[in-house]
Image 1: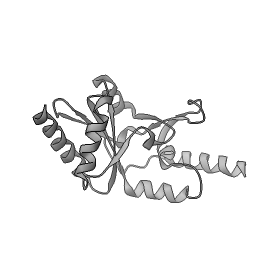
Image 2: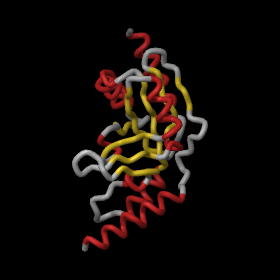
Image 3: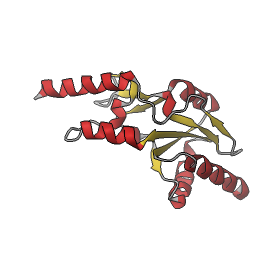
Image 4: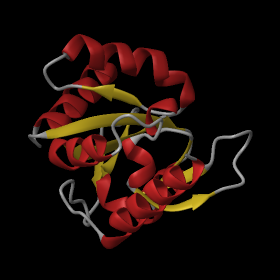
Length: 169
């Protein structure tokens, strides 16, 4: 098992470190089918992206190892999400001084009827780099991965969010 863990960590580190100027979020899931759906349809999350993911850095191998140990119980498929720092910083500046999180702006759809007050969002699928099988260390890449792609729906979300905030005041 130790050898396999080492192969998985090596591959995870390699996949994370090959893209620069991005923030990386990891999420484990139990089934290959769910991992495949996330590649094609995007990543659903409730509230904010960091409620169900862990942000890691290729410059912090100890953090990556910690993630892999702690989240192992959640499943054998690690979803790798990467979003350009430029996109995150751009939207974060626009929503500064609000309780809105950048991940809400980057959603391709939102279910307003989420549990409690937290809506369910779906992160655009082009931010999903791929997934890594924990047991085999095999990486499946997303052919549509583009961490820097801004799409029109982001600006629409921004206008909608800012419009709702101005009506509350």
